[in-house]
Image 1 (cartoon, rainbow, N blue to C red):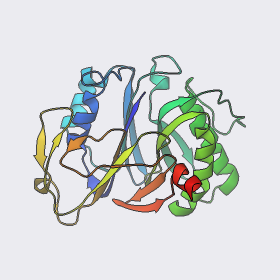
Image 2 (cartoon, one colour):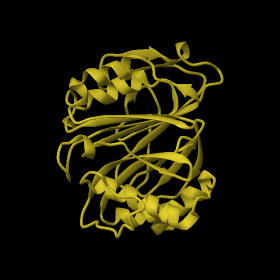
Image 3 (cartoon, helix red, strand yellow):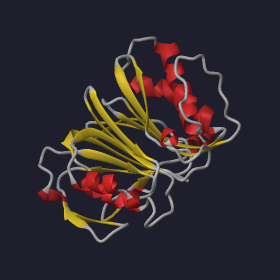
Length: 266
């Protein structure tokens, strides 16, 4: 399966330390070698970079992990292909425009027999189940809200049952952002944490690097990180429940839905 990473920050931040560990899973410490991509999203601007090779062997990925690109929302993906050829068109993150915003999406999982009816407003460029799901979600948002962009809690409450509907076709762990906030949904496996003062020293699980976070963050900094598997030692990563949806804005969690298992148990 693919792996996901996201950072949502109160201030524009560089994720060079975390991206170094994440990129190592693209062929060095794990076998996600069928492509990689990252989106840097600040306000109205969004830069998306994708390649169809292994992140651990990419000079561009090494440069992005070493040279700070500061953004309030950073979304990254390393691919282990299940559907669609090893091409740039099938590499995440995918990008679409709606309601005056740039939307970026990445998926970890495998959807079986998922062929939703698309009306032409959002169409896949590649052949992946992931991009089909993204287009279908954007189509439904446009149909439901028109060009009126709601606040993220309302948007997430609308999206949550649709995400559960897609997840009936298989594993549907995903990240979605429009540059204002970051939504994460776990159908099987996803973790998150919040970094805030006092910052301490942490080390990567996928390398020999460690950093004193207090040397690179100030007292006003706050950020949320999401990853398929925890990226670091020495931090309190928390697992999502199956079916749980969270939205992070300026480093805080502003929306959380109960996981499917908890809701059924209730």
